[in-house]
Length: 117
Image (tube, rainbow, N blue to C red):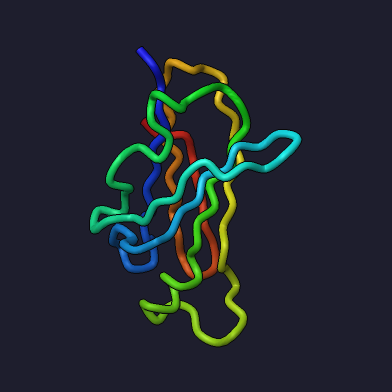
């Protein structure tokens, strides 16, 4: 069974899934290489795995969440300088056969993540 990568964004300030957050996935190494882009749906998830089984491999990755626009749309961040704008999460995949789920819990002044299921 081949592994895959999923993610989602929860707006902890409003207590809802964060719809409309642009996410970019990069492979890290000697060169940072873009692998995929997606936008969260009404459930705060991408419509498909951001890294499906056929492209999934052990290595180091970065998910970059474009949160500033989302926070501004919902009145949670205003002005030209936002405390949080782009949120990077770097992580490693060691098991090419596992499901990795890396969510973002977001508020205007902080965030957290974990390896979910």
